[in-house]
Image (cartoon, rainbow, N blue to C red; front, side, top):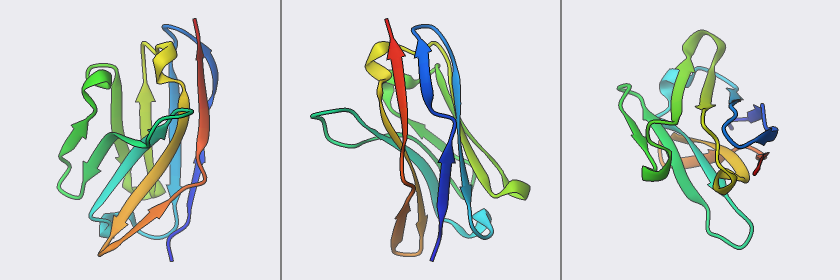
Length: 115
């Protein structure tokens, strides 16, 4: 069983920055991939950024150039640095890890961007 604890959400003005953190139990190097998803009210959950074991990344088109996913293996933590935030980035952000055939989810952290 993998436990994920997210932090770093909050309220920020458009153009501002936030950094989300997701601390995982255990060694994150065993995960196939670590990712951030988000879900806005009335919308489906969508993949925002993914970092696989090899270090390759993938981003949602609308966040490319603004968001960066990274990890600290020693701290078993994955980050999402979000810059130049826009009101449309407002959502609950979820950390996700893939271990074998199983996906694990964090509890979510609210990000609100005011215009």
